[in-house]
Length: 338
Image 1 (cartoon, helix red, strand yellow):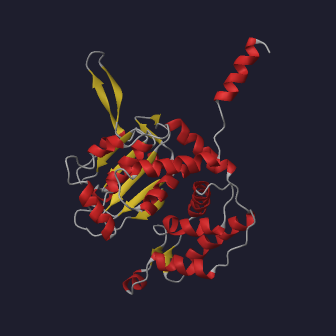
Image 2 (spheres, one colour; image 1 turned 90 degrees about the horizontal axis):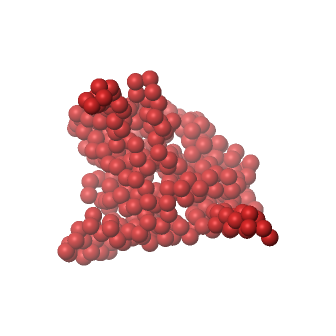
Image 3 (tube, helix red, strand yellow; image 1 turned 45 degrees about the vertical axis):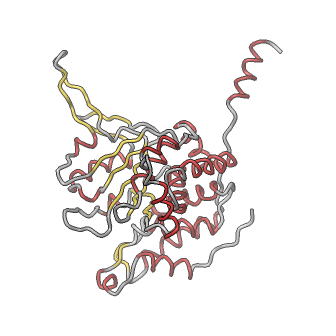
């Protein structure tokens, strides 16, 4: 073998293809790493990881003090992602998010000064506290992953994922997210209070010499940004879904539009995200194929913010989750063979 052939062979050996087994292994490592800072919340963390693999944005809803921000920071560190946080307030301007044209005195010209949206993982904290004009500044970046300023377009770094938080209780000084923005989120995750045993562990662990943010330094990154991008490709290309299951997903989404209690059902974007999210869930399990349980597992995360209830039924206690549960219960799932 010539020296040239040896070099080619060596390159092939070094660029080993990433597969489904790598995803399952990496996810376990991420969970172990995050558990150094976060106690409990396993389902939320797994869904956040699935969103990263699906390349989708996440809306985290929960009362203050239950570690929504900390979970996002911990996940960013575990995947070696550049992390930035924006505290959304009523006086926040769109340019505070996307960036602004700034004057350069030494040359006498203007240049684009990037805003905090130019990152890998952006935490939009209390997103519903900013006025609609500022919320709208996120639309282009979340959908097209770019920012347009002064007739120029600037691409955001890849991967780019938004984790936004909001408090479901407070209404004073808030601006409800418009349907167009809500639909940009692949998942809406409900973060609840920790179980009593977990809360005791939180108290014991984080009332010593160091607080939880100091412990972020204990999180050892388990993958790089390039690996995240590669795993996202694996999820979309290597995890298969049968035609029957695709029809099952579309049927579920269509039924949200047919309910008399709903004034706006889920859009075709929901069908897309249910498919991608189900693939990511299968990959987390180490499988190359989607089964009905994967779809049922992600259904609420994908649909709960896209199914809007008529006021008269909402007053009687009907919620989007009740509608979704009913649809899943009465929609036969096709049998799938591995």
